[in-house]
Amino acid sequence: MKSVFCLVLTTSLVAAPALIEAQEPPPLPEKTVILPRGYRPSPAPLSPAILVGNTLYLSGNTGGDPETGRLVDGGFEPEFHQIMANMRAVLAEAGMDLSDVVSVVAYLADMDDYRRFNELYRQYFNTEPLPVRATVAVRELARKARLELQATAVRTR
Image (cartoon, rainbow, N blue to C red; front, side, top):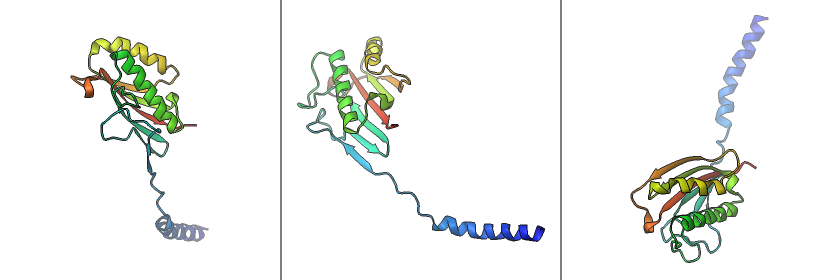
């Protein structure tokens, strides 16, 4: 009985490397630019989002009007609402919505806006689990914006 066992074991060890070498590596996921029709909220040279597999990487957004490319007037709150409208448009173009967002990085030009930021944020992100988040105070943002949001979303359905 011992000799049969050794023969099978030896044959398996010899054949295993051949099987491993014969396997093709899985194809790499493609990068797809996500750009809603007529969407240009920023004059900067960037893609609004890149989809790789089921993960969507959204560029930072400073509340530019997607038709004019100019920052919306009115300060912090109008900028925040425009950012979220822009984010929703990009997510929708990728077949996603705010519930697919898993991570947000917020850049605030003034930490005095932090409390109001959280109040507005909860109006849009109100289902569990909430995205992970980092909030950073910065000295200045492009176009004198009051805030910028960057996000990552993952399609899970």
